[in-house]
Length: 194
Image 1 (tube, rainbow, N blue to C red):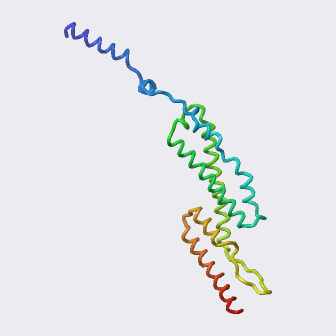
Image 2: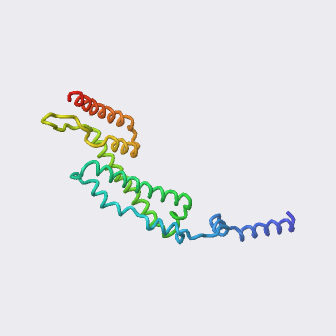
Image 3: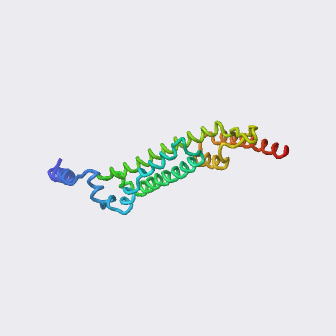
């Protein structure tokens, strides 16, 4: 090998080693670092917590309250925590830096709290709906005679089943429709007897 070729090869090798940087360094250099945690969205997300539903959730869990009122409270709570969780998901999808930058623990904790609250509300809500579906018609006594009556409004119960969107929704709706027919049959029979 000639001295000239050897000098060229060594110069290329030395130049390559001196300027080599890692891909992370190159990425950091090429992208402008934006502090996502100082944005308005981050401020809104930190303030948006689901801790405030605990008092209403305890009202919905109160067995001494009328079932229709409990269902109504669960419907409202379910909508609110679901909406908040969706806002977190949308914001974090649009700007992933909100979840991965240093100091994002508050946002992640708030989101996780909302996810847990949504799961708690859903579990309790579903439990109440299933309990009512197991016995949707009760005996009322009118003029000393037992009469079949709806435990609560079938429309309210139907709305709760729709809102929960359960896997066995069709079966629950069928059970509800069958229960509705037993009440209608009794009502029709009673009107004819008068």
